[in-house]
Image (cartoon, rainbow, N blue to C red; front, side):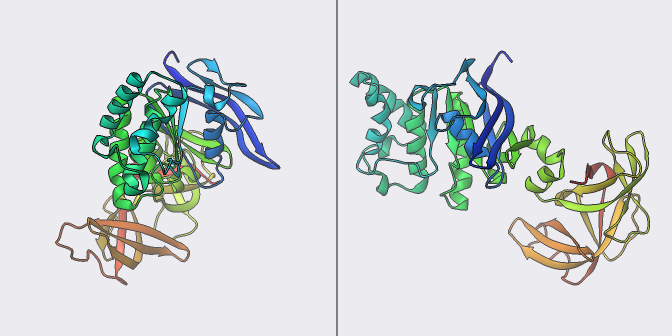
Length: 366
């Protein structure tokens, strides 16, 4: 790829007997906002630390702008890391914190002042330049940490759980600001997070990781709408599932005979290449694709399961609940709050859950 910013080649990293990164290869294009998403222990932080030069790969190589980083110390790499804790100097003002890296490079004072001013304008902190960190909000401290990275004009900005310390409302605000700033500066951003909504909102592309391996790479909408395995389906969003046996598979379509819920007939599904009749599989469908009808109604040409409402919670813009459809199977349901807060279905009520065959994704059993 001619516009490649980062090229990770078969990276391996062990921490004692634990294989933290298992032959990971990833390519990130210049100017891309790329996220590493996964649970604790997935290997994403180890990857970030190897990019920063704080850890050395046991095998493999990292190229940034076509140059191998083998043997290149952290202070010589064209990257800057924004720490989760922000790591601001408490005795320095905002402007002094941002200027610190430039002063270490012994740039002329006029150049330092010019770059610090421009960067503070970018992160909208010019009016706070003379304050010390403990007089700033969490969001403002996060922007200072980002400005300190940007002022050095790196090729790559690394973000380690950048919004983890913020409350939900401020987190959402900072997501929008962070994406806007990244678009304005046009730099490559690599972000580590375990927060699914954050990764979906920020990223041009993302890699979902588990136990040191990359499970899937793609655009947020691709990973959400077309997960390639059950781990991605379950980790990125909410997954309503039915397990069973595939039968009558022809031309990419078939029927799933459920083993964990009772239905009058099989469930029509689209079947991916590689799965044949007789295969054990799981169908997953997102809650927003499921239609809720009171009572046990006919399927009307749609896939249909019957169940009983167990919970129903009001969360502002919508209602969210759970429907028991089998002895050990509950599905999450969502209903728009379009009727002035009125509950769409009562707890304990029988309901029918319907969805189009094309809205279900069939995956092999893990």
